[in-house]
Length: 228
Image 1 (spheres, rainbow, N blue to C red):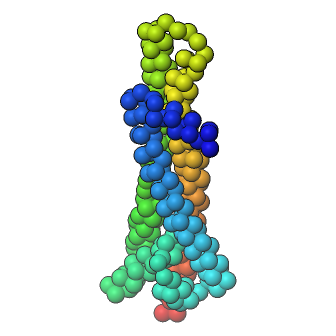
Image 2: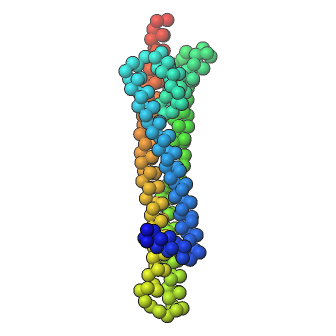
């Protein structure tokens, strides 16, 4: 309890500039943790749904069954959203009586790539903010520390009393700014690295599925042409 009161008193007794730095870092921390929670939920949902969708697809690689599975999937994300975009494009091509395999393949590739880009953009949204917080927060905290120490020594020079009791509070107040900066930076940068790896994995799986989807359509078209 004494340590808590001492910690709070150091913050309350700090200079205005150091308190301003602490306030900025506190805002960064709140925003950072909000982004971390949001990304953790959305990326976990995308990874879980992608894994479930791929497991169901690999157990029965049939175009009709894949179409049914895609329509039945709720809140599509990741590979399931990619399959939905592919079927939507293939359906539109069929309605326009386009039968040329090369044309269908090119159109599907463009539709799938556009769907992948859209998904990746959603996954990467706000990650740059996390990276920025992780990079600049220690320097902002260090600025507060330097300013606080400078302010403490200026006050010491004015009083002329070079005792530990007179120096320690000012230095302690200043060092709190660096500690808060690290408290903001470490989880932000760790989360950024974790989420970036998750996005890269999802992107890889989507591109792999996109190739498999086009191959599945091409086999269907080739089989239909042979029967004709």
